[in-house]
Length: 519
Ligand code: NAD
Image (cartoon, rainbow, N blue to C red; front, side, top):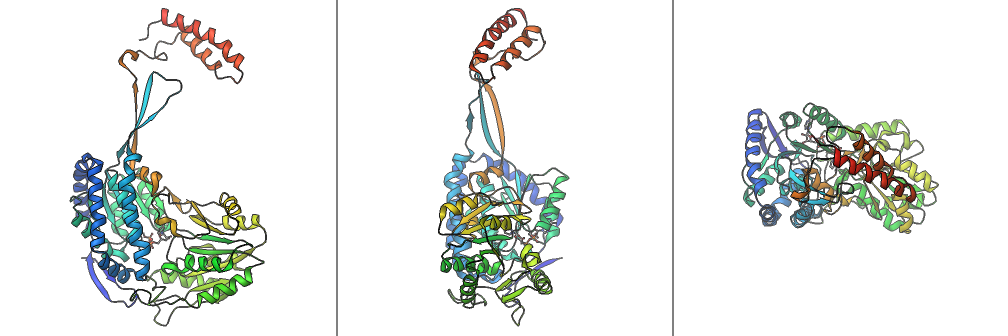
């Protein structure tokens, strides 16, 4: 039997071994998810929301254990677990339980030409949704998606990252304890092979968060069955520091944006694009602050700022980017090497004349690494920020908020934060997702919730006396043609032309009704 070894990345200690879910277990999970979804969708939304509010309460009841578990399996400091995993999860549950009714209720659409008919949009669940998650925010990312899927009436098959399997198991326990019915939420364990089997067994939607490489594989496999996919993939997020920026503020923003969660965030500041006039002072202050960051194992609150590299295979990518940058003559202002035990990459700031041609500047490193360059004009800053294959988030730091917004409107990304960094992936009210190689689809907000439902359009007569054979039905006749031809003329710009069309329209219409029988 293949097992996942769940380990503490700070010391290599084995936390537990978890067997891979077998193909047979997956097939059985699909069958029970399909059956359970039918009764789940029939529950009134209020009842589904009550159970999710109970989940919120259950999470709070176990908050201290969850903090301990996430900081041991994922390595992040306990403050980050509380602030960037638990708090946003509670916010997301609260938001969707309150607001989902409004998004999911029927909507009437006023019609222009067909005023005797009415159109209604009905939202209905997709069925079984597969949520496949990465390891970097192992609690926040999946629960946000799971809650949206469940409140909309779907059942969920969840595959946590192999590097977050104990946390995945905890999520299953919390759901069970909260009373989410068996079959409505099930967790499957394993690596990409289990993820691939989940995709192959034809869920009704795949909500994937992870790397571009895996995203492409999933999309290719999903195309076999035309399974819809949402892809939340990588980023190489730029932070623009304008000449007027408060440099104390800007350097603190870059520090947290680039190095929180040890830089293992899709929305981390990985590229710094700083106005040349303030670049030297900016560097000096950033380096001063960077030197105060404390890397180390998770301990009591306040004992460290950066944890270890969570997922060991990621180190090979760090090393490749560092080596390539060195070979291109990049200038390392800080870091650039691992700690003695190899578990921590020291917070790294790299720059230099050739930096814009390096992998470390162009490809996602997903670690505590910032590559810095400069600009001379706002246009150049925008052009540099947009010169990326990714399009997740960008930030602009300036004292002139209007100028910040003008720049924001020209950046090719899903989110721009002015005088903030990184954090909006944790806000429930706003959509999260990217463009270009970052993928497509949105989560959170009303837009995100709509990704978890089908929309059914119901088109009906406004009253029974308005039921008649439509004018465009067979047989095709000259008066019918005349009526529609005159109708076209009513779309002219000039009022006079519109008016001229009316007698033709009426005459043809009357003849048409008098003389012709619809079949
Ligand atoms: P990954 O692509 O290696 O793995 C993600 C998940 O996919 C894991 O559960 C893995 O087991 C599974 N998987 C792997 N191969 C599969 C296959 N062929 N079919 C189905 N499932 C498969 O990514 P990772 O290393 O866990 O996460 C890091 C990446 O996630 C980074 O690129 C980061 O930017 C991205 N990310 C994006 C967002 C976002 O919101 N855009 C958020 C967090 C992380």
